[in-house]
Figure: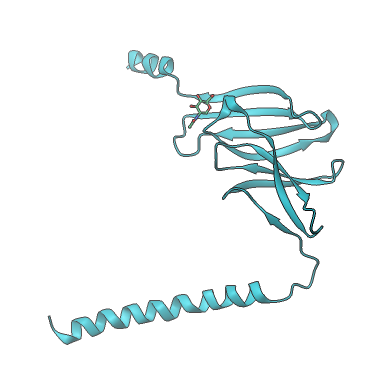
Length: 159
Ligand SMILES: *[C@@H]1O[C@H](CO)[C@@H](O)[C@H](O)[C@H]1NC(C)=O
């Protein structure tokens, strides 16, 4: 192996190291900077939250769980501070386990939350589901698409 080959590899690695240091330094400096506005922190129990909306009547943020089999949670103040919120799960629908809870709207007029549910990785199921904003009882579940065994068999039969 010639020295020029190795020094070329090291130069490329050094170049990418320096290149990646610039955005990382920027992120660190903006995270450490004192914000100019009031900031509320939020401790999530999961990894991915698809949607967050302010519920003005309930005086809370509502979030949808993209990971962990889906669900809806609310953000409420902790005992220690009003500026640090914790997540409390309101809905964990067993009928939709394994699917992601995605975008939602608050339908204030009918006091309900409309949620788009889907199998994001397999792309085999999607639905629109509504929950009562006071009781969190499911009002309806409309399947938008699903690949049941029956539909696969009928699809194969039609070929
Ligand atoms: C999504 O929910 C449907 C309906 O209950 C279910 O048949 C399907 O297996 C779920 N998807 C996943 C990935 O678990």
